[in-house]
Length: 67
Image 1 (cartoon, rainbow, N blue to C red):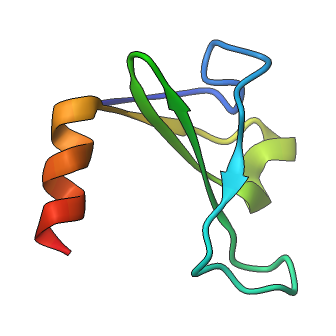
Image 2: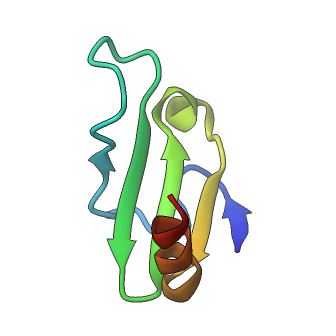
């Protein structure tokens, strides 16, 4: 798992907003699924070059099982 700039090193990731995020645009978590794993970011920080967390597929599956 590691953090990168807001592009995650890839410009065209297929970002999706979490269904648990508020509709007012204030508290949005976005995820992008790739072959390498899952990228997670806070949509408020994207314009500021905020970090992207990359999680491997195995770790992501374990996280989902734990919740």
